Image (tube, rainbow, N blue to C red; front, side, top):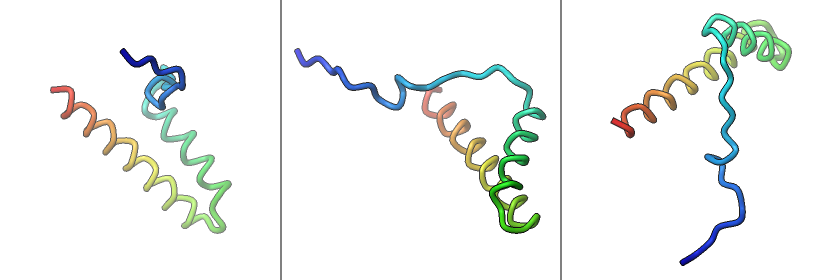
Amino acid sequence: METRNTPTPQDQTVCISTTIGDLIEAITDIALQAGKTEEEGYRLASFTIEKLLREKRRKDIMEA
């Protein structure tokens, strides 16, 4: 029997209780600060939100 002592990304997952609106606002604020222009900031926010939703959907499908 093999014992694994190193944490995996799944072991390090943290759940945050928030509303979708607050999450989108936080992502957008960070993206606007990171982007060189306002347009780039909104694009970064859009890509990030899309990726989160896609990953969540994929996880839900795999668990079904």
